Amino acid sequence: MAISAAPAPSATATPAITPISLKAIAPWALFFGILMLVLLYFVGSEQGATSVFSGENVHEWLHDGRHLLGFPCH
Image: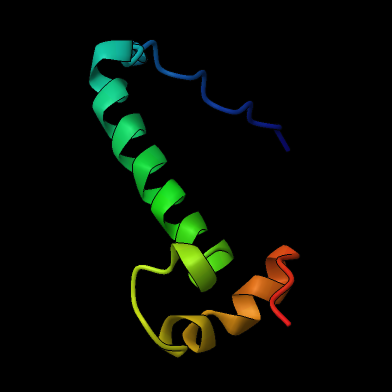
């Protein structure tokens, strides 16, 4: 009984990975950075003197997220 060897891998060219330029990433990084700052404001500071919306609605909607991120609110 003969043992057959595995076939040799084909000599196909692997595609080259092209790096993404900083010019292509910069607008998206700026957008997501501003979005994160807005979300951080609403989770961490949306109450009291700097409140954008009056009342307790935003505070109550984000209450558990505040405690999860370590913001005191009581």
